[in-house]
Each structure stands twice: as C-alpha cells, then as structure tokens.
Amino acid sequence: MVRVINFKRIIIMGLCVYILLTVYFLLSIVPMDLAGGQYSESGHSWHHGGKRINIAEKPGDVIIEDNSVNSRLKRLQHAERKTKLLKPKTSGTPRPTRLRTVKRRTGDLFQEFVKPSKVHLNFTEIAPDVFAFSAFFDDRYDSSFVRVVAIAPSGRAKRNTGLYCVFNNNDTTEMVYYETCENHLQANAYYMLSCPVPESVAMKFDGINPLTIAPSKTASPSRYKLISVITNRLRIGSGHERQMGRFAVCIPPLFGKINPLRLVEFIELSRLLGSNHFTFYTYFVSEDVMRVLKYYERQGVVTIMPWYIPVKKKIWYKGQSAAVGDCLLRNMHINHLVAFNDIDEFIVPRYNSTWSTFLEYLHQQQSSRGVKTGNIAVYRFKSAFFEVPRHTKAQNASVEQQRFQLTMDKFVSLSRTRRTTKFSRIRTKMLAYPTRVFELGIHHLSKQIKEEYFCLDVKPEVASLHHYRMCDRVYDMSCDEYVQDKTTLKFKYSLVNNTIRVLKQLKNTDDFV
Image (cartoon, rainbow, N blue to C red; front, top):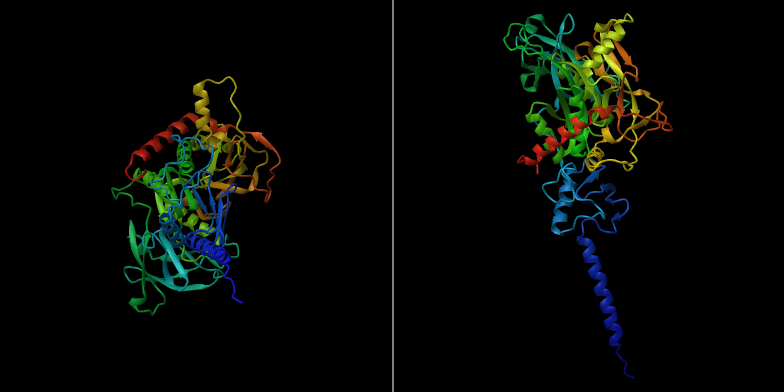
C-alpha cells in the first residue's frame, strides 16, 4: 500500500519553524531584548544584565544607578545607533521652553558620563595601598607642617607611616598618620599625613613646591615619589598679595544624573546669598553638567577638581570626607568662610538677605551676651526638608503674573514653600573658618586648631539649612507636620533673571548646544 504524503502538514510545519527562527534572530540583535530586560511604560525603566536603568520623563534623560558603566554605555550607544531605535515619546509633553533642561547635542538615548582624568589632580600611590591626592603647607601652629590628603586602609591611627619627606636641602622628617573620624567602619579611610617642616625650609616655601617622599630612610632615589605642595599664604612684601575672598562653597563628590537647570539654580542662588567661589569635585557627571561647570570656570567662579577614587566600594560615600578635608585646606588663607553643601542645600538667613549681613547681626547678638565671636571656628545650621509642591491655579492673576509663576515652578527653591515643622539637629551643615579648623566632619566640627575655638549652633529662627528633597524619617526627623516657609521668595526676581541670562549665554556658546 502506497503511503500518501501530506504536503499541507509539511508546509505548515515549515512555516512555524521559519517564524520561530525569525523571532529568535530579531531578539538576538536587539540590545535590550525582552528576554533579558523588562521595559515598563509606566515606570520608564529598563532592567538589563542585573543593572536597573531608569528613563526619565523626558526623552534623552537617563538615570544610571550603577556609575561604573562607561564601557557598557558605549556598547549600548553603538547598538542603539546600529538598530536605529526611536527615542521613547511621552504623551502630552509640552513644548520645551527657555528654562527647560538644556537640549543635548545628539539624540542618543543614553547619556555618556564624563570619566575624570587619571592624570590631572588625581591620586598618586606613594606606598602600597596609600594614595595621596594633594599636599598643603600649614603654618597655623608654632611649627610648620606639610599636610597630605590621602586614602589608605583603615586602622593605622597609631602606626608610623614608614614614609619620609625629603626636602630640597636633603633634610628628612617622618610622616605621621592621622586617621579622621568619619570612616564608618569601611575598609579604606581618609588620612591626613603630616610631615614636620624644618624652620630653614619653611622660610622658603612659596607657591607650589615639589616634595619628595621616600618609602624608607635608606631607599634608593629610584623608589622616590614626587608630589606638589601648595602654599596658600603669600609672603608679606612679596608684591603678590591679594585680598582674601569672603565666602566660598565646597561641593563634595558630584555624580549621577543632575539636571543642568538645578546646577545653575544652585550656583546663582548661592551667589545671591554671598558666595564668591565654588569648588566642585566631579566623580561621574554628564557632558551637559561639565559644560555648565566649565562655563563658570572660565569666569573664575568655579574650580573643577576631577575626583578619580583609586579604591571602589570600600570607602564611605565616594571619599566624601577626603574631599571635605582637601577643600578645607585648599581654601585656607584664600577665603574667610567656607560652606560645605550638596547642590540641593542652601544656608538661608531668615531676616537678612546675605551671609555677610546675617553674620553682622549674629555677632552683635552674641557679643551682647558676652560670647567671644573671634573664637568661633564653625557656624552650624539645623536643617529642614522642603516637600514637593502641589501646584494650584493662581486666582485673579494677570497673564504676566501667571507666566512668571510658571517660570518660578521650574525652580525648587522658589516652588517648594512647605517645610517640615521640626528641624534636624543631626543632619546639619556648616560654615567654617578654614584657618581655625584642623578636621571637619560632614555634620560637625571634629577638631579645631586651638582649644578656645568652638562651634556656634545657630538658631533656626535666625538661619537654617533648606534641604530640597523628600523627607527622610531617620535620626531625629519627623515628616508628619509642615509649615509655610517663603523665605527664599525674596530672591525670586534676581534668581529667575540671572538664571535665564546664564542659560541664554550657554545656549549661544559653541560648546553648549
């Protein structure tokens, strides 16, 4: 009996195999496939390769939770261009205005983060696992010292370094470890290494001086390390004396997704409050943020310090304490007072417009109580959280007023006017005299130069720290009660106008599109 071949069944099976192979091929060339990643329309997030990537509400804005992803970003960008993926569209997105986030030069989905330079102003390994970032000449005591900001394994507070400073006249002194207080039981810590400077050598220190570090007294010159020592104090009669700046702000390691408008707002409002200069430590930031910083750097307003940490995930908060220590010494003899803030924090006087007038009022108030204001090393400010605003329509407002209100809504310092009733005594920030402080913690004064120097706690009704972020129920904070606080609205016209002017200038420059 002859078997009948079922051609219909063979054709159907062939089509099924073809469809399966086609689907498999398409999935294999997509950079973030549906098998390895999940895309959520509501949450705008990718999960890929064990890393979570959040896509912001606007196309082109990406939040990378893992900062060690430069090489992966480049591969993803290449794959994205190769497969010509379209940018996600958000329904109902209004047309961009002049105060919206500055447009990117390209339409790539993934921002590439600028990796700090490994050569310029970065750590030098002066001994095994001991990395020096900077060195400063310190003559605030009867004897002079070289202070080296360094990162090394924890637990060396009472040990000799075994390292020696070799000066130009071949005088040699041994380095001493000083382990700072805020290392949070991490494997690596911020150390201040100190070398006594012979008096004959100290008299010749000026500007930037080369310093040789030897690993032992008998080490050969081939094993020496060379670092530069910065001398901020200018000699009297040298003809190069300059007047010290009044106020400065230090911003510890800056990283992650940052809206350029937030950065400009931070700088411009801080300038209205009285800051003359800013020092930014850049860890991983976007190209747009670097362009904003370089714009201010050309004006002499900002100093950019590339912050490439030699150890990863073994030191507290990306080496924040070391950055604070470096900035304190860097501003010594250059600026009278230095604030240490993040870009969502502002020290705001309640009744005075600037830090200068606020301090005059505070000193008069304290002097009347018998306080020696000349012995103040640090002013400490309690903090309050400012909640996300609930926008309401302005009643009986003119068209111009409504337009200005819409503009103000883009500024966190102007739109968020409800703060926590309670102020935190723990999450404080400080305004410090660099010449009077030996070690500064993140939220407190750790060690002053002289015993008679002290920290003055400023009452919130005089001035406080405005923290523009979601309330955090930790330590001594309560997030249940809020009050109206419109203190920053006194800056609204100047802040809006100054920010618009800066954004226009940024847009017109060749390196910012």
